[in-house]
Length: 338
Image (cartoon, rainbow, N blue to C red; front, side, top):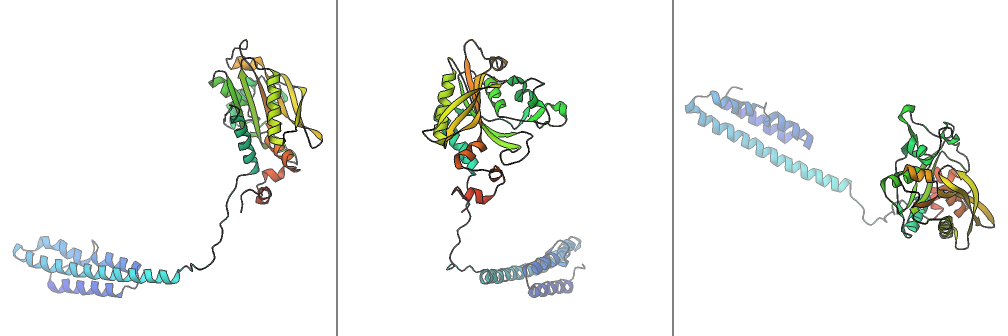
């Protein structure tokens, strides 16, 4: 831009006209860039002052400064006017009728399986146990070998276990929460009193009583002088706390590689004996793997499926209801989902 009074005046009038014609904030923003930005005529006039003779620089400097001040003032006034119009329009168009009745928002609730897990955790915490957890993607050694489950055991086939590729990673989706017991014994010295709730995985078809993903709670006690009598008393207390004070339990001889002797535990409920889970005295081989002196310490372990416990407790006949996430199922317990 040539530096003369006429050009400065023309640039000023053009800017003022554009500002006055702006109908909204976006348009005004564009006008500001065009007439007050670095590439605007008035900015170029300011830059040209460096080439003006010294005796004229002060005069032209005042003219350019006054022009920019006038345009800036006009811009601020227009900005305030348009913002006021916008706020008034928003208040008018987006007005909230505070006299309308409010609606009650939906409130979430815990799944019955989660509630049962918390109830069992609180029950055993009250007995002095602590809750131990571990990863669901587990080392094959912790899931099988450390539990005295040999390489040729049927549980270690791909028909029963989800192995993670590549197979030489030696990782599996844990088939029980027993690896948490191993981790606990490796990391802590006796006495040990823990329960281990969590999700487990087996290659089962989904039907009314089976699912490839299910929840377990296992218990482990390692201390001096622990016997089967302690195990039976613990299971009696557990069953009566969950199913009612009149519930009885019984132990049937069985076999598990990680306990010796081993037993299946049943409980008498609603006039019939119902299989509940497995239990037994911790196999000395398992204790030795974990560095526990078997001449000084012994222990028991037990494990139950939480879905099965929930089904029996509440008369649920189809496991699909528990795992499919249907809110109507949760609401039937009167829990959440309002």
